[in-house]
Image (tube, rainbow, N blue to C red; front, side):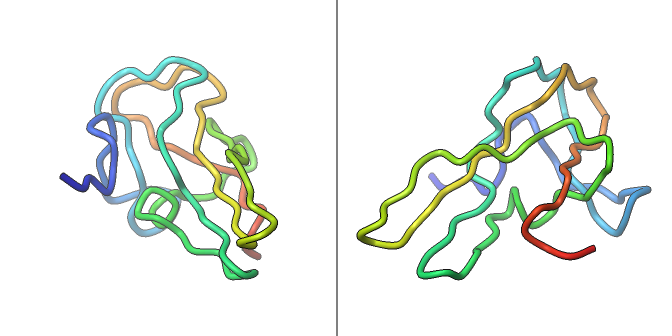
Length: 100
């Protein structure tokens, strides 16, 4: 069964901007939350996980390049927690693909 978000996250109203991702439970530092972005032939595609994360200059997560295939011209990034995240805390990321 397809799940757009891991069970540990939910989408709620954000104080940062619009809707955001929030922890439904305590998340340990180094937790891989799943695929946030995929790049195919130069086009970046956001997954639901990547589509609802808000920018912060002091983020609690980081995008990590998972793999790439030069033949197919694809790349994939996952979202990994930089520190422990409390239940109810918004998940944030320093934007690097988009201008803010």
